[in-house]
Image (cartoon, rainbow, N blue to C red; front, side, top):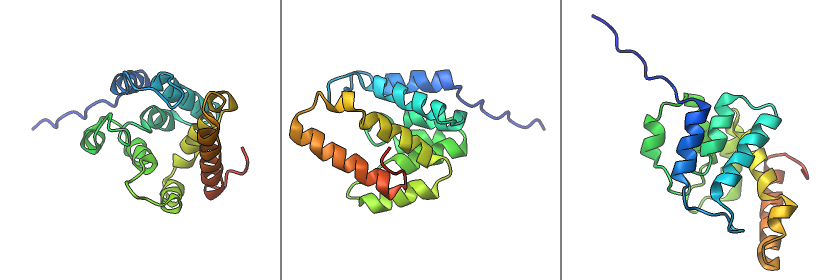
Length: 155
């Protein structure tokens, strides 16, 4: 009896297209298209020596958290178990303390590098400069706090 062929994994180009579509119409805190953030995080992962699984996770890192895609979609997606684990690790839970979130990231192989790229783009002074002072101050402190919890230093 023939065995069913495994579903081919999504290519990075397909993951990018999917992520862009899932976040269509969404903007970041500065009013920029959200896909720009995803592209910057994916580029940051690549620049830091990340592999294809981490780059795919970078494209999808906010999709479940932002309700652009569901946990059920992620579980069934044609992605490697490692990519799914990284996306899951980077998905904040309601009411979760930063320490628990950081611990999950550190416990998931490959997730720290993706979060490092995410934090680097989030904390980019050019992005923060367009925000009002209280928001800029709050976010700067939040990102520095997460970098410290992840052992990333000042960045």
